[in-house]
Amino acid sequence: MDQFWGTDTFPVVDALYFCIVTMCTIGYGDITPGSTATKLFSVLFVLVGFGFIDILLSGMVSYVLDLRENYLLRTVKAGKTRDKGRSLIIDVKKGRMRIRMKVALALVVVVICIGIGATVMHYVERLEWLDSVYLSVMSVTTVGYGDQAFKTLPGRVFASIWLLVSTLAVARAFLYLAEARVDKRHRMMVKRVLGLNMTVAQFLAANMDNNGFVR
Image (cartoon, rainbow, N blue to C red):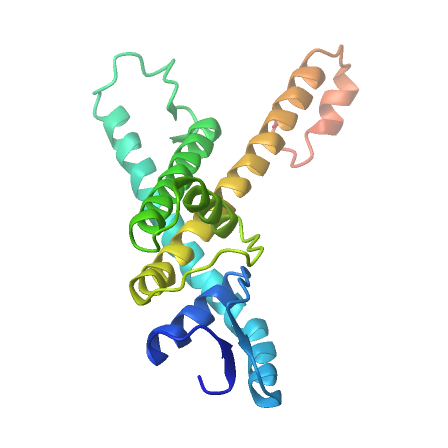
């Protein structure tokens, strides 16, 4: 870390903290490359490391959310819900969690991450509550203005783990929001098509795989 500029705590922790902040595309600016070699390293690290960590941890976040979805599906199949056909959580016909519930679950995870981050920043980094919430939100959304950052050793240890989980949770929430919008548009299009007066020739043209069904 001798060729980096910024606030020092512990070399190994600072190095890990710098890597995590870089891979999460936050860029607080509290630790920056200070030589040609470290700048070249940072360029290569961002290009290679970001894609690798995104694939690795996106799979982890998806696995955790899928566990919750599978549990709810098993609950429905076991008959623990009274009204299966009208379940607001599970789409029984499709055998999956409703997209709206996926969005809600992901947003709950984001709120929890923001709350945990703000609490730790308040008690560990000794920030005011407003500044703690501000830094927490700016971090999970990868904005990172740089006016606030982690400066203590315990804070940077926490950030090295928290930033990975929280930033990917936010990305997953936005992905589900996009999926919900696409699904809503698809359902509107299906309703519009089903409301049309189609001729036999049009139905036959829609049967593209010649199996007698229109999907």
